[in-house]
Length: 404
Image 1 (cartoon, rainbow, N blue to C red):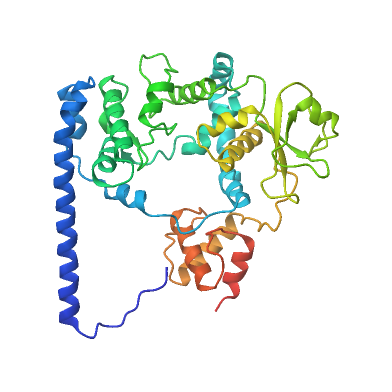
Image 2: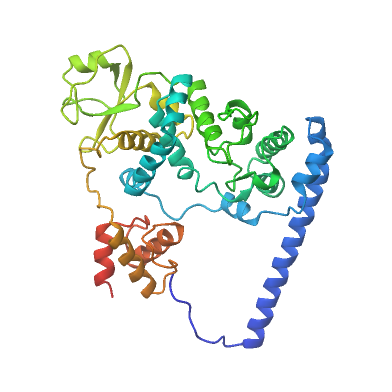
C-alpha cells in the first residue's frame, strides 16, 4: 500500500459534498440490502419448515442477523496475485505447520490410530487434511454460517440456488441439535468447522467420533477427525496405500502415463531417494507439474481421493507431502526449477519491517505472512515492475534492502 497523499483538495466544499453524497449512497445501499435480506428470510421460513425445521429453530438461527458484507465482497473480488506450485507448497507445508502437526499427533495419536483401524484411512492423511483446512482447528473462518449463506443466497448473483440449498441443509443441522447457531462458524462461503464441510457434505459424511450422539465438527476434535476419515473412506480411500511417490522418471517419460507399480518398477523407475518402488498391481500416473526439470511423482488412486476434498493438484500434493513430513519424511529431493527460496522467520520479520517503513500496512511485524503482508508485497512488486505474486522469498528481501 502506497502512502496516502496529504495534499488538500482544491475545492474543499465540493469535496465535502462529494464525500457526503458517497456516504449517503453507501448508507442507502446498505439499507436496501438489509431490506432485501429481511424479505428473503421471511420468504424462506415456510420452505425451511417444510424441510423439517421448526419455527423456533428458524427464529433462533436468524435472530439479530443482517447482511454479511464481507461474504459479498469475497464472492466477487478476485485475488490480486497467484503463487506458483513451489511457492504454494512452501507456504502450506511450512516448518510451523509440520511442527504443529507433530504436536497434534502426539496429542491425538491414539484417536487417529483408532480411526485408521475403523475407516481404513491413513492416520497421517487425516491429520494433514485437518492441518490444511483449518490449521488443526485454529482458523475456521469466523463467519456465522447461517448469515453468510443467507447473504449469498439473497444478495449476490452467483449461484444463489446453490447457497439456498446449503442454507436449508445448515438449518436442518441446527434442528438435529448438532451445534448451536452461535457456534456454527465457518468461511465466508459457508464451509463449516474444523473440516470445512459445506452443509450438504456434513449431512453426507460427518461422523460422531466421541460417542455423544452429536456430530460436532466445530468444538469436538474426535468428531472433526472422524468426519474427515469418513469423507475419505466414502470416496474410495485404498487402505494400506499412500498417495504417491516422488520418483526419478525414465528418460522420455510422458506425463500422464499410467502403469501398475510393478510395471513402473520393471521400467527402472526408482524413488527420488534411491529406494526401490514397491511392486503390486496398483496403478499410478506420472505427474510432472514443473516440467522435465522439476520434481516428478507417481500418483496412486488415493491422490484422486484427496482431490475430492479440493479438486486441485496443488492442494492434494500439499496434503500428501504434509502427511509424509509429519510421518518423518524429508522435503522433496528434486528442486523446483528457478524457485526462489522462502525466508526464515528473522528474514520474514525484516521483510515486514522494511515494507512498513515504506508505508505499506503489514500490521505489527511478527514473521507471519498473512493476507495483509502478501498484499503489501504484491503492491511493492508492482511498484518495482515485478510479477505481483505476493511471495516472500529471498530475492524479494534483497530487492527491498536496496530499492530506492
